[in-house]
Image (cartoon, rainbow, N blue to C red; front, top):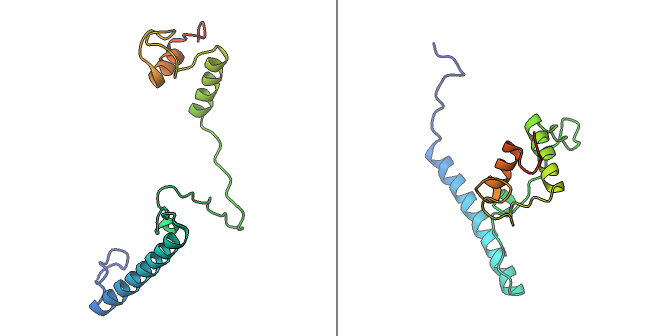
Length: 128
């Protein structure tokens, strides 16, 4: 006797697969025709015909809670709070990793590594 949770589902029949593929193909061609018509009318190339499916460059809305209201963000982690506080102190002291010369105020590195080393070594802070 097999458990329903562990049973392997049977593959779909060929007619169902063909019907699904035809529906998806028709939807694609419809979206493509709409995009080409808009491009022809406006002269501006559309970003993507797949934008509704979460393509790159689209923003997703936060999932709604059980009552339909927008879900709240989670509180910041201890690490995020620590980094935000250290970055504020570095910014106050005038440290800018984008313009810092190699070795300036940090003992080496550059860019993001320079900021990380400054935080870790206490440079630009005097001490930790």
